[in-house]
Length: 385
Image: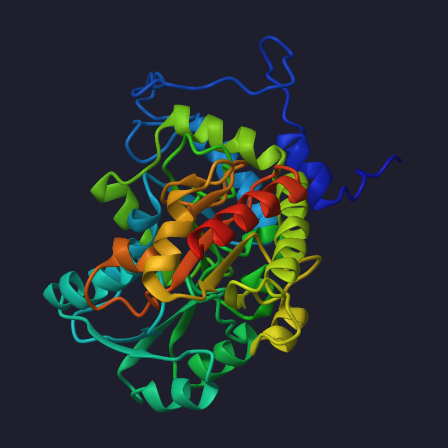
C-alpha cells in the first residue's frame, strides 16, 4: 500500500497543497466568486456553502495553506485587513477584561487600544514585553485575559521570548496572541512555542507583492475563544474577498523563496550599515549586539526577518534628508513586498510616537544587496555634506 508522502511546508506551499481543479484539471485553483448557492431538494446545503459573507471556497483554500504554514490545528481565518484580524481578537473578550500589550507595537493597533478598546469596556496595560519581569508585573490576577505580543516589534525590532511569555500568560489564566507579521511563518511559528493565536497583516510578506490588503489569524485549539472569533468574522462581515484570497494564495506559493532571500539580504545590509560612519545604530535582531539576539536565535529559524531600522548620525534632519534622496528604495509605508521601502516613522506616527526622530525604517526586498547598500551609502553621504 502506497503511503502519502510527508511533504515539507515549502513543497506544500509551492503547490498550494496540491489541489487540482476537478473540472478543468488545471494546476491553479480557480477563483470562486458566487455569493449564494442552490439548496438541496430537502432544503439543506450538502456542499456546506450557504452565502458569501461567512464562507467562500477560494478563501478556504488560502486559509488551509496558511494553517499548514503556521501548524495551526484549529485552522486559519482571513480578514479584509490586518487591523480587522487583530481587533477581532480583542472584540472576542468581555467588557472588564484586562489586556497586556507592548509599549512599542504597530502604531495603528496601539492607537486603537488606547482609544476604541476602552469603548468596549476593555482595560489595557502597556509594558516592555521583552522584559519578562515587567510582563509579569503587568498581569492582573483574575482580570488579565489576553497578552498580546509583537515580535519582532515594529519599528524598534525588540524580541520577546514567546515560550516564556506563554508560560506567564497561561499561569494567569490568559490567552497569548502574537503578531508575527514581521517574522513570517518561514522564520517563526508562535503556536509551536505556546501561543494560542497568531496574527498576520497578510498585506505584507505573506502576499509579498504590495497589491492585496488582508489580515489573518490562526489558532492552536478550536476552543470557545476561537469559536467566538469565528462568529465575529461571520456576523460582522470581515471576511476577505475571493480575488484578494486568490492573490494571497499566489503570494504564499513563493513565500519561502522570498522570505529566505529577504532575510539574507537584511542580515548582510544590517552588517554593512552597522559599520557605516553616518549610522549611529542598526536595530536588527540578527546582529550579535542586539539585546534580543539570543532569544531570536532560539525562536527564529533560518534568518531574522526582513525588517530593520537605522538611526542616523545628525538626528532628524539627517534622517529625513537621507530618505529624500533614495532612488532604489521607495519612500512609502508598508513592508514585506519584493521592492525595498524606506520611511521616517516618527513623522508618520506623529505626537506620542515611541519612535526616535533619527530613525529610518527599512523593508528589504529582493533587489541586489550591493545596489541597495550603494543607494543608502550615497544618500547618507549626501545628507552629511
